[in-house]
Image (cartoon, rainbow, N blue to C red):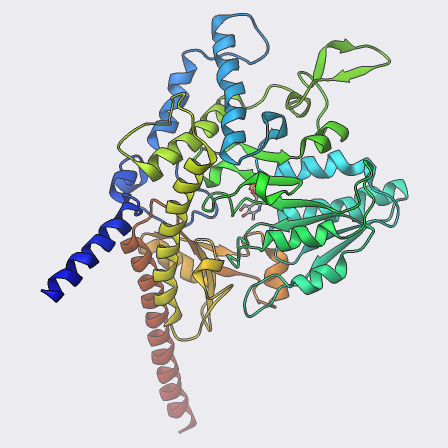
Length: 482
Ligand SMILES: Cc1ncc(COP(=O)(O)O)c(C=O)c1O
């Protein structure tokens, strides 16, 4: 009897837990890659697009027209969809208003937008603090500003790099704090590392920025904070309002949408008072151009010079609606292509399900990988501190060869420095490379297991070949010396 009670209680717990599990088989029916038998585990580079988003290109093409540039029904229709896309993005990341949103090509362009819009605000003797954990996209623009652009105007600005703990992959906040002072105009920090997988304690970085004492042009006394959210936002609930950072950048091609659209979400007063990044059509106030004066358009259009990637923007925003559907109920289209409202709690619920699934995959793969002799897995040991990527090296194995062998077994991975060149060099990796598996919410637990087991097999068979080569060499040498 007691046993029956226990097992029925256990079943109830399991059922409750199951409610929170993603329906991965149903989710996978929305994609083309399973038909190819592909094991897509290079999602930190780009994710796969659901069929609905690809079909949307064709559907939208029936009313193909430019935005803000015509009086036709088609132009009005596409303009409405385009403008509504800004609202969807705003809601998804809980920004106050669509005036906070700048649409770019990708995260890299979003970061460059900040760099160019602040260019003229830097004062001689200022500094920028970033970290050794950055993707090159959040280091090279600041390097360029400090080493190449500002010196041409006689302005010296230092670019400082905060360290991370090699063993744990955690950002060294004490070191970061020691680099920040009353001349730190901006701190530029990754949200989650694309190499170590570490999620940064952003509220602690924010605290450091807030107490720097830097005098900003509007009288505020603090450093600005830019967060590169490219690896954070696709798998982790991210709320711009709560984070309270100044700039948040990310790319849609890492969260289901096809290539071509990124976002800069910024505090409105910063976009209002900064110079535009690109100058040209549509970013000017209607009719306000004369030989001596140009008036800018209101936000968000001040940062939308030239004909934008219209279809890309609409489809990327719909990718967010579809992501909610896939996470919450993949058999129903409650949000995709509808006008149904969603709030931040809906997004949080969906993203938490996605995070839990990715965590489960990562934990499984890390467990298998960690038993491989000679392996080094970079970043935090605790999956709660990580995103869904695992970078590793195995002593005596070339990471590129592992990736090639994985590919032969049908497992897609990435070897290289993943544009985290500073971090690879900081760890003195030679070559500056690692092999990386990265999961998204359409991956199954079997795929995570198979990918990790395949690494294990590759390493074992290489070790066997090495041993037999050594044995042969010894036999040969012995033969020769005799
Ligand atoms: C952390 C991080 N930042 C920036 C980028 C650059 O993104 P994009 O190529 O979309 O500009 C990436 C891409 O891998 C990334 O992982």
